[in-house]
Figure 1 (spheres, rainbow, N blue to C red):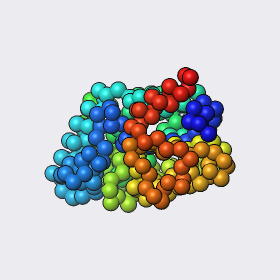
Figure 2: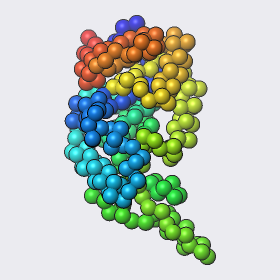
Figure 3: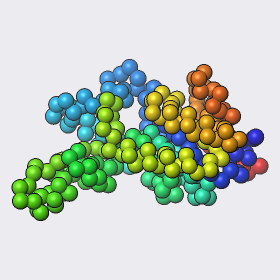
Figure 4: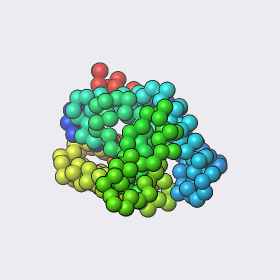
Length: 265
């Protein structure tokens, strides 16, 4: 089946995305920083909380990222996904990205599940209460005790020490994912629904749990005679090749442009 028909006719599309959908907006992916002190694996490792100084530097880094992202525009691929969401054909968008660019596009935001958290959310490590935070309030809230913990203390004869807010993102080596139960619930619900097409975009599927998600999605769709699409500047690894009925070895924006052109012909 031609790609034109995949995106023009199929009504139930699931997309799993990675850093490659945001690079054209100016956000570096893991590969571009690999081997440096500021690589993703170094900057986003649980060891950043080993000392107060390391935690402070980590939070400063995230704050700078959030300020930068707040000034960016959604990429062509984000807008392509938003078009699918607006037409009701994007069943779900699972993303590994924490940049929350999808939040700039309401239909896409409603369809998106963040697998690794997002920069514009903080949560209390003690009670797991989460809160959305604007750029201008980010630093202040990080220094504040958890409002939910303080509220609970008012009704306790022996108040406990309130927790503090930390960024709601999943780090390498972190065994506790505050969103894990919600993510698994969402994924189970999707697997029980009819899916016509799966698109894997901007990720090499190197993280095992994410790869397992992709395997289950692609297996379900291929068994139902649907289509599975790989979009990346690199070919899929040998073990992944059999999963896909279509491959687009392009940047995500270029792929969105090509698909958009097909739909208008």
